[in-house]
Length: 338
Image (tube, rainbow, N blue to C red):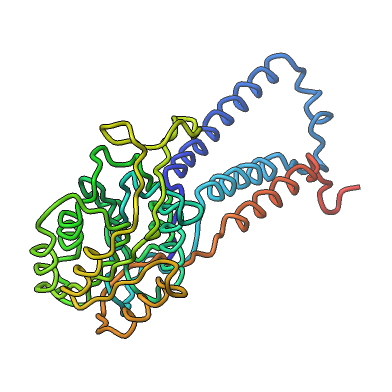
């Protein structure tokens, strides 16, 4: 199928007849001026009978060269356009904790940065599965809807930081409910949530949210980030410089520790599994292996086919016509002339 990258540029073709009309007007006017100021006896000398003028041919070549340039600028391309594909996979939503405690550095370089690195690894391993991203702290936010565009998901992941959400806290229940709502309506099965957090929950109703997920066929895998020893929470200014460490109401420096009980409870209620980052080798890979062995669905997606660009052909023709016209003489001897 032939298509154009910049179809609006074809309007420039309207300039061609306008240029022809303008050139014809100038040629007629010049001829009249010549006839008015020159002796008729001089015409044979200016235009010998044994020569044939090629001015008209050169004019046509220049015009065709202009047409080819415009067609080249239009970006003609050959391809099948948008085609529908059917893929098989699961829908996976990663719910990533962005609360202030995720800035702690007991996991290098920080809990959050290490979590993002693990999610990047997960995205690189996906095989036909669709992924979505939920950011949560005191409130949840759908950072990236379910998609098979892994590049876009990776870009949206990079934007996730502890200052993304205005309300602090760790609302597991709201995050789970938002993730369940983010799954497509037509998908009644084959859904998984990977919840990544340090486990410091400050909200209730976790059990009811997890049971709702289980009833909807959602399996939740939880990944604990942090250490049982804990660490302080750094506070940075807008330039990224360390100012202080987070303190409580009594001005004492807060130490945040990994709290696993809630994360284990959520995984158990939804027939999922809990992993602690650093306790096992490649926990995100282990989670994805469980997902791969789950029931997989077939879904439709769309993909742009590759196009073969044709603008170079038109550009080459334009250059060839332009050079031919430039090298062509103004006139040639008639056949048989002495």
